[in-house]
View 1 (tube, protein in one colour):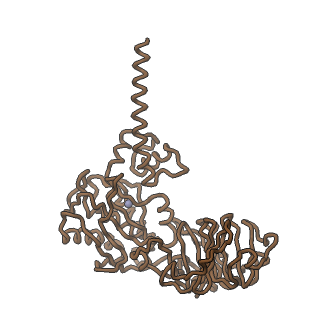
View 2: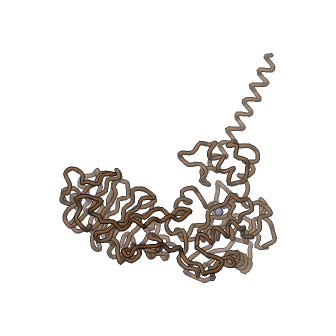
View 3: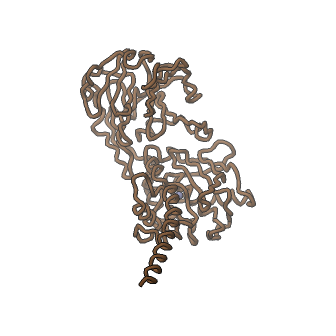
Length: 456
Ligand SMILES: [Zn+2]
């Protein structure tokens, strides 16, 4: 009996040790590729991985699941990126796209790489009315081999959705084959097939859980560059391509006072990722999220600003939503505060701007709250940073030149911090702020606001 107990104890310990080791390996993978977030349990994360990999959804780290984690795969499609990807602007507004190849893998002829990439673009051109032209220098889609993933060597490539510029990076450490009939193996990856996949993302497609889809994130042997009917359907839906007519972006039935006809916006605010308001003169519009079924309910808008936010003047200069989801509106020398969900002015308001925000001038053009106790006020070519918990609230370095945000900007109409990105609006164009001055991204802005934000 004693022996049995010891045997059982050892068995149990070995089993537990294996599990811990397995878990320690699996968790970073599940986090890296977006299956595990702050609100997911391990079992839920494993299930969603199993679902995408076409495995039975046990929620357990069984052998087949662990094995699948070592298959060469795509690194795009983290949950957060998917969320962003389905938002405004995950489609190209034009059909004639250019691409460049910024660097090449070692030990492969340049001509062969060029040909594999050309053929990969061709797969998508055949089922759409996109054209893809290779250029030297500035291009819509930049392709390179700059990925050197230390932790996940089986990461074969990644691509950005259109809203992020569509650029593609392949693993520079992988061994690549440009022979289009060579299947993937653990050691050799087929560039043509993986390029078809990554270009799918560049055009706006997300990962698919069809094992035969080119958009499955797992590059297993036997996959070819064939575009699955489900991928074709999704692309055609995304770009509203029918079999009989030329493609066009979906158009809505707008009223005469359409948001599409605006020549500038006064303010843009968001309470959440799906609740965005745009203000112009005495009117405002609500923009609903662009989800998979592209609901864009504009029928009830525009509405009068002063009908909703009681006590405001007919028109406003600017507005922002603070950390507590309270909304501030500005006009001339005054500001108004509305607590979240309330349509009457908060007690004590309106106040003078100087009383509520000491150091900030009157007649401001735009306000930007980065949700970190710092609010930026813009007027003409200058801006001021306002720190809520510091004295003085406005540092003596201010005002500063607005061109520090973007050298192309001399003045702005509106600004918003939205889904962790900063956007500036001027006339009917917008810019996204790029902290690192990524020149590849900068040249993609400005973009037309009506097209990318209002779906016009
Ligand atoms: Zn992918």
